[in-house]
Image (cartoon, rainbow, N blue to C red; front, top):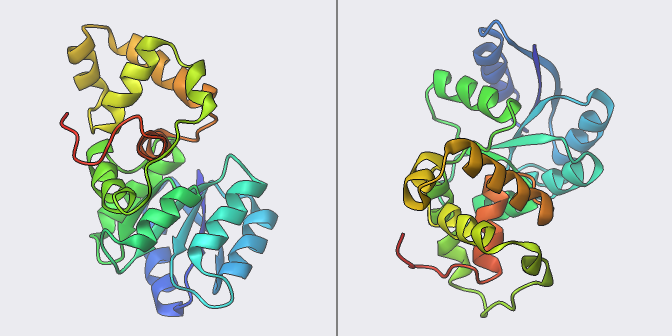
Amino acid sequence: MTRVLLADDQALVRVGLRKILEAEADLTVVGEAGDGADAVREARRLRPDVILMDIRMPVLDGIEATRRIVEENAAAKVLVLTTFGLDGYVFESLRAGASGFMLKDAPPEEIAAAVQIVASGDALLAPAITRSVVEEFVRQRPAPTPPAALDQLTGREREVLELLARGLSNPEICARLVVSEATTKTHVARILQKLALRDRVQAVIYAYESGVVEPGSAS
């Protein structure tokens, strides 16, 4: 059973989300929070598997709440819900440690499926979608200095990171490098471990912000 915490300042939204999630046999809502500070406290107390987090909330916004929750509990999975599309709020929430985002007007079955995906340990966003978010905002930043941690990667791991950041899925990476899926998964796992990254979403952000790939580079 996946345990979910709802964090949204609108009670009607929380009621609707609870109905959507509890209609699924393997999902249960264990708590609710009406602002970001309350979300941090409830996440600490309840240790839910997934936190559904609104971005714009009083007291503490969802981005800072996500950052604090992830800092306290590295295993926490935050799924951001927003009425906004691919904007700075989404980018900053991903940088803060969120595992993905959904629009609030998404169909109920998609929201439930998103919670299950994040709970399983996968990042919700396909790399290509993450790339479109990240590129938009990395363009506006000064040229990065490659971090020393990149030196830990082997040549093949560096290659896998570049392909992952350019939006290729595991099967596409396999085809490009002519390796098995098990080998690709091993490379990805080692990249995340060596760079101390939570998931593929964080790997894409890291690759762009460290200059491994540049906005607009072809796949």
